[in-house]
Length: 336
Image (cartoon, rainbow, N blue to C red):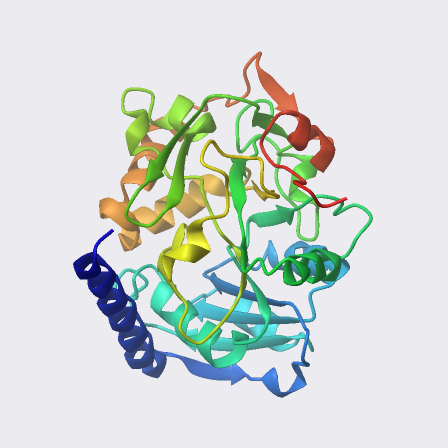
């Protein structure tokens, strides 16, 4: 990459920072407890809308992992999500009625909060239906992982998004508040993934799994991307570009070896495909706030009405992180 391209990327990073600074005015603090944040705390950043039923288990999962503070943007929920989060002693909450789409699908809001509160901390940027697993997560808190990353000067850590699903129709078994969603959505595709490199940003682009197989069977390249870099040692000059798929400076995206998987990596268990998905799809289609004209949600709507079973004879039932390592979906690298 020549000097001109480097200047262009630097300018793009600066523009993202300016956008985030301007969009900060769309956020109103409902419960700001960031004064409680201590040096060394691992922080979780989330944008959510109408996820009240998922929040109790989400918070418990990451508290058990060792997360000390949560920073939420509530995007105009009407199900009590913001009020519930404001009652939690380890949560800071901002509310906004502004457009999710116009905020670059919440990334402008996240970039601002990450810069203001995440600088100097290891940060996890997540959706409420994503559950981070990493090597030894069953025996070691997340601080053990971040300490190891600090020791080796590693600034970012990838996690492939692994779509989880039930056996049978998606809405057949209702999800209960506080329940582990993997009690229902415990299956995943062990293969069926496409990987390519993005030379401009030096990240891998991963697609496939049940969303390509079931919802985009005729155009799998239109399926959502599964590569994410959710765990980052945040510094003031960092910005996410597109969800948590890639960042600038682009060195933060070099989290895999060129053929993928040899460096330490994790997975995000994505518990999207469970009740009440049908109602969520209807709501999001009405709002039209998602990427590419809500293409993903149109695909869901066309298929869910047929009560599809995402399970197939090649589906694997989730056991633990070691199973994912054996399947080549994550790696402990040289972390012993």
